[in-house]
Image (cartoon, rainbow, N blue to C red; front, side, top):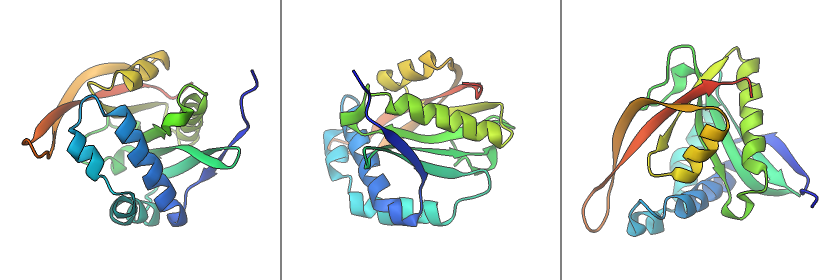
Length: 185
C-alpha cells in the first residue's frame, strides 16, 4: 500500500482556524472516553481560533513554532514546540529541555504515519535549536497517545497535575502526566 504524499509548513496567523478545527476534532475523538461530553460538544472552532490560536501564532516566542502537516493538500495534523521558557504554568518542563506543547492528528489520519512524521519533524526541529531532550504533558487516560510516546522511546517521569473541566454535572478532574525523552528520534 502506498502512503499518500504529505507536506509540512510553518503555521502563520492565517492558519489559526485550520489549526483550531484540527485541535477541536482531535480532542472530541481522543478525549471522548474521559472528558465530559457536554464540554467537548461546546468546543467552538471559531472561538478557539480567535482566543487561543490567533494570539499564539501572532506572538510566537524564541524557540517556539507550530507546523501543519497536510496530506495531498488537506490539513491532517499539527505540532507546536517550544523551549522551556515558553511552557505555560503549571505544566512545567525540565530546565534545558524542549517542550512538545501540542501534537494532534485529525481522526481520519490516525494510523497513516502522519503522527510519526510530525514527531520526527518536531524532534529534528528541537535538535536544530540545541535541545537534546524534551518533555510533554498528556492526559493520563489518553492511552493511545501514551502508547505512541512510549513507542517513541519516551517515559513518564512521575510528575502529575490534575486539571478541572466544567460540566453540567459538576467539574470533572483529569490528571496530566509528564513524559520526557531524547530528541534523537
